[in-house]
Length: 420
Ligand code: DI6
Ligand code: FE
Image (cartoon, rainbow, N blue to C red):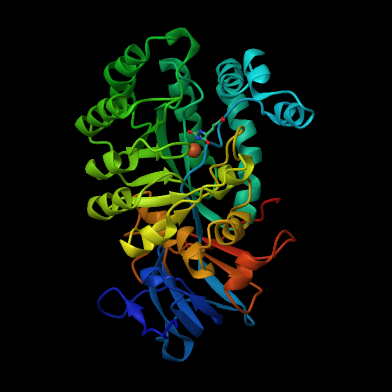
């Protein structure tokens, strides 16, 4: 059972405060639990939380703007820690073809699959990619996402990967949301490198990543470790190059088969290993030792009609923090709702609603290296939070669809509305 927790403030009670928000139950998510504060208050200064606790204990802050809610709950802003939201075109035509009986092999032979997205992304201008990504980000923001990670990985050439990463950086400047950028050049083998995967890895390590680092275009480096993508040896070369440039790593691992990429990621103290349907107990143990978060992606599991679940029980046993994300991408997870992922994480992977909510708040933040600044309601964190007209946090997980009106506060200010 969650217990009521005492007020939090950084050291001394704060001298200055811009605004106070009260009248709702705080779902603080400290230590990965609901940790409710009934009739709570949040004090904000300079875009950061400076005090939380029961409203009756809130210090008097002269001159602060007072915001009163009439009930409801307040959660931390949502963190979507794994997306591929920047890409050209979409693959709805292929989705329809498959359901009309055309085989995956026939679609691939006709230039479909991931390479069709690569072609559309290469052909698109930076502004076109930006406009399409803005459109896809709207529903996530409407649901209360205040921090999102976006990967490259559909350019697969130096020029097109840099183009994608510049678009990702521009989204972070244009929108009231924190955007973390990840270079996923090792996502698939570009057609011009057919039969020469090691040469493509050389290009990533020796040419692309140094430019990415010097132009500060990425916050992390990711790769896809799978038979149909890159081997553990190739992934390790990318990791070594990233580390030499001071960039943290992440990995798509154990999605379709077991290559122990997650243990490799853990050896490199990766921020996260993601997908993990085929991970083993030993992989989970290695992840615990490496401080690597398990990012679970039920959207791709669902769309691929996968039947093997990630080893949630092993993650619990070894205390590996579990994050949950949309994996929004045109092929395997055209998912633009993190709330739907909350529900799928519970119904498909048997997470508890509390674990699912931790997955898109504090553990999602940890998967991005943001555990000191994001993901919980406590003094010292950014003032990103969402007010919901609900009585219990499990309701966020329970409803399938329908619009839940909410007020989103980003960096201490009410954020304008986005269309869902
Ligand atoms: N795993 C996935 O599910 C996506 N990428 C990856 O590494 C698929 C991306 C796509 O089909 O466009
Ligand atoms: Fe992915």
